[in-house]
Length: 123
Image 1 (cartoon, one colour):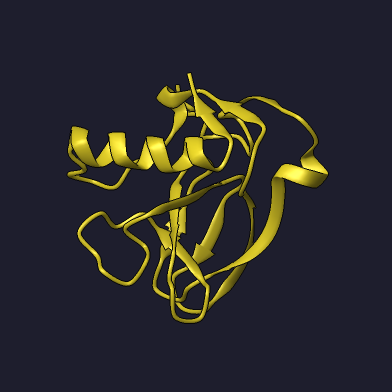
Image 2 (cartoon, helix red, strand yellow):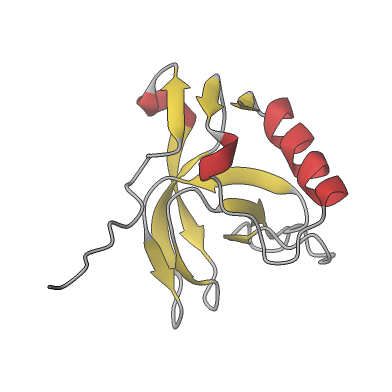
């Protein structure tokens, strides 16, 4: 018998948000960001304003948490449009977020604080 594995659902990390028309926006993911799942914490590249997965060791702006990817997106070979939770008020399930591989607790704490400053609270 085949075993099926259910993947992540768009917005599955959201516990509550004030209004989806206020908290979410369509942004551009930078080419090379890869295939990203809902709940991926994103950083915004200062030059050009495109988004990519949070990169705590970077110095191009993507080291600062700037939003959370709402649905799946593929920016492997080209820039891609994607819906992102950019501001609150919103509450998300911290256990459903996707952090960069190797992110340390201090880096996650800094990103959590940056999201809180945007009105996105992790619970």
